Amino acid sequence: MEINLQNSKASKGGRKFGQGFKQQRQEIDPMMEKLEGEELIDFLENKLEDIEKKLARSQTDYEVLQNNCLEIQEKLGKSKEKYKRAALMLTEFLEDLLSQKPNIFRE
Image (cartoon, rainbow, N blue to C red; front, side):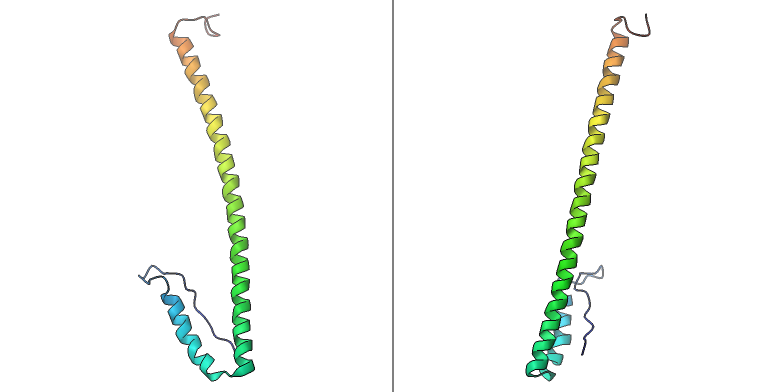
């Protein structure tokens, strides 16, 4: 006995957070009324296992995304430093050109 539950994420259609949960509960409640004893326990255990699996997947996905984010931030920091050094070198070069100091172009 399986119930198809919809995702409770808010959609662009103006659905408020939690409406998906209410709809899921409305779908589950009639099924729970029909179940008795062991069937109800099995049903709820299966639902709990499904939720735990989804949670584990979500946590894994979150960790992967977090690691990707850290890698990207590290690369961004390296790029910033590289361009900062290049800008500093160009600035010094232009200052030397403008100040009439002997430099590699005048030797």
